[in-house]
Amino acid sequence: MPAVEDFTDVTYEVDNGLAWITVNRPDRYNSFRARTVDELVMAFKTAWNDPAVGVVALTGAGEKAFCTGGDQKQRMESGDYGPSDSGLFEIDSLHRVIRDTPKPVIAAVNGFAIGGGHVLHLLADLTIAADHAVFGQNGPRVGSFDAGFGTGLMARAVGEKRAREIWFLCRRYSAEQAVDWGLANKSVPMDQLHSEVRSWADEILKLSPTALKVLKQSFNSDTEHFAGVGQMAYSTLKMFGETEEAQEGITAFNEKREPDFRAHQI
Image (cartoon, rainbow, N blue to C red; front, top):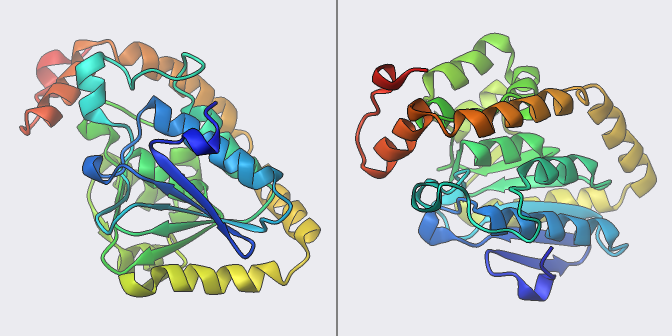
């Protein structure tokens, strides 16, 4: 894993007990490639291991996007998400470390939270959104899916019917609707997003860190079985990604046209 000082895709800073982890690829709508994921994993481990950090905030650079999931341009160019230190695409490790970090994680959603980026905010303990933020899933639109935490946690947050609507229709939802449905805790104007996260963090930092750690672990224990489902799904996704049906999704996305999945259905 790259050291913090060697990061290219992520920034990491600590301010009075609050660690800010920022996906810094605004030219790609803060989508992630394999290196981005490696750096995010290391950033969370750094925050985990720092006794001066009591709260972690995850956000995206700029005002357009929080995170829009996997970099489909990279996927089109190389057939994968690019090189990584381990040779693997460590997205499962990223999901695990967000859940396992024994400190509250706040997603500061500053724009589009789509696809794999939407899953990241679901994994966070709390979500505060800018009022222009947009939420939604994109997998079936680009020949992909998330069948672990991305489905299970969503159903817990919004209920089965709404979770299936989000996945099966791939619509976009406003910050106001996300709060109304229970996808987000609060919506504020963009210029107040960081100060609102700071305010929540300051309240949390006054509380017992051990109590918070055990509470987080207790909440997580109720949904831990989704991890095994997710591992099976990733194995399936790797095989599915090589099919003509999946490739049609990537190609159509990059060509900015509607995909014709039925013509390539496996």
